Image (cartoon, rainbow, N blue to C red; front, top):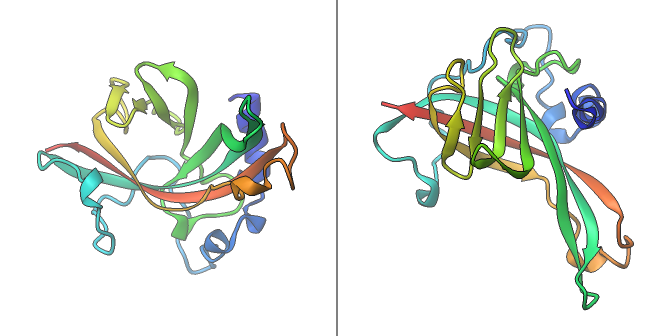
Length: 201
């Protein structure tokens, strides 16, 4: 694991009790099942309560494989153009994958994968999904279509990955960069999304 990822786990993965209301409300009680840690994908039936927008609809020859929840951080740096106009620049995104946030424990042990973005195109893609499950070394890259899959494992046959129900992750207003924050300041913003994965029918 990279140094950044280990720091990320300390910031987010292990201390989720302060993460946000949407995560805190998902803390399992003693009657709920424990999270599944030895496989990727326990939600294998496409949820009925969420409609996929037409602009990102998956072609008919693909079928739903599983859904994962993603919790992470986006780092934004206050920057400026040569003319002095300030803006927020995304400089680092790191998140982890869990099977089901309704059965999530706040000890970091429910993490079954990473989701991050490469600084430069890697194997044809920017967004990366990487398994952390023992015995499953699968990985995929997308931009936005799947550009590379590892030959084996849970991600090996994925054809489409959709990010849905994204909450958080945005920086403060642009007007605050250069006023409330000086050039070079970095802020970390937490976010959550539900990600659906598809394979060929």
